[in-house]
Length: 114
Length: 113
Image 1: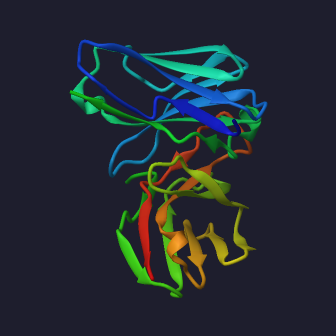
Image 2: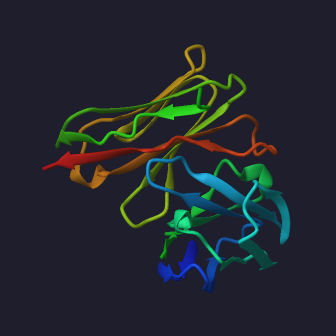
């Protein structure tokens, strides 16, 4: 595997379900990001991790819970989501926070909340 | 006024046409300007990166920044069907500083054979 991978690629869940999105980067980067991409809207930065430490949390509801066990893996735990949370969730990485202007994105997880 | 404005299109052109994609912005502190290309069912990939005002050329692609007008452009010469994608502009105010990147909504481009 190369670059940034995300699983699953598609996820359908009910509002009461609990699920997790997984991201793995094979680039040796130290910073990782979660973004939300909705139709007709700009990319919204959700969380930023640097060396497994969360450095930014951009007013994201608590039903989204990130986890970064090491610099290569990033998870987004989901629970009691709302239909408006349906979107493409993108993971990205960069060499470090100073290199965040050059981010490498994964293919995304298309999430549908019923 | 939104921080970054980008016409979402869609934009449809014939193969071989010159394509012009644009973004305007309001924050005069932005110094770094990027264009990302996003194919259907894929994540964005960095296409062009420019610093401050001026032009940068890479093959058929030219990125142009006019800081005085707060206006950036991406030109695609001799467009190909493989250029069909959504193009996102993005900008930041310090080199890898603590400020996040700000993205435009993206312009969907279709190049017809």
